Length: 109
Image (cartoon, rainbow, N blue to C red; front, side, top):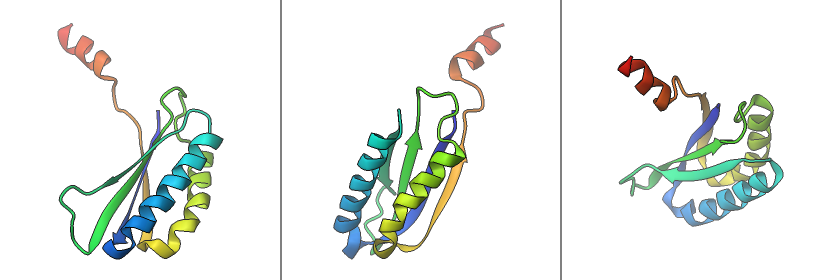
């Protein structure tokens, strides 16, 4: 299952407005895309003037996860954040290597 992670920087003075905008954007995406689960995180201990944030997207009930079409829809919605972030959004997709239960079976045999 492919998951999407997008990181970017937010100036502390924009943090409240950015949090509200990201929450609204993710709520709209989750309502529109079947099974989408979205989170937003901030780098731990990052109380500096420039904070690092990460959006995470998954579709646990769908084998394909977050495919290229869904990633494009996310980026289209994210255009609304441009004025609130510092710099560009950087996205990466990841997929599991081996399910943990399969790895445990492989070790025990």
